[in-house]
Length: 164
Image (cartoon, helix red, strand yellow):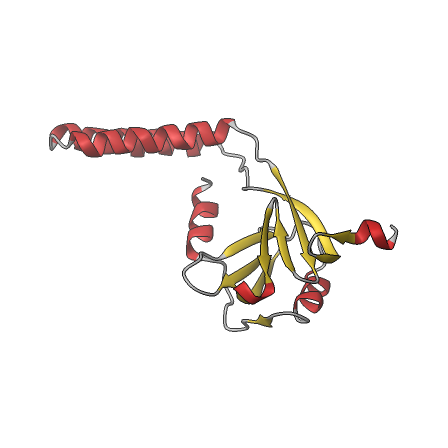
């Protein structure tokens, strides 16, 4: 790859890969039976307590899960550049990012997290088959690593456990 092909709007690309926007889980028949029981129980509770607003919320959440399951995840391009990170079409300057940490527990968890300054939520990036040591070495040139974080975010862990 020539030097000019490595250039992008935000400086030289140091590393890049793509990952699915979300994990698509294989679910067993037992998972579906369990979800039918949970949703049915919630709807029965709604009818018995005349809480129809909660019933609407339960049905809406069920529809979100069903439609989410029917759609294939889009692949997101990720670049580490001299000036910051590019995730899909969005660019994050190094000055906007507080730190990073890596949770690497293959085969289930291989995630790079970025913590932003201010109120922005954390950004999880699936490492795919990237070498986490090499990714860490590149990022340490621009950011501090948060070594106190030893587990994935609770929401990520819960969604992986529930396969949603």
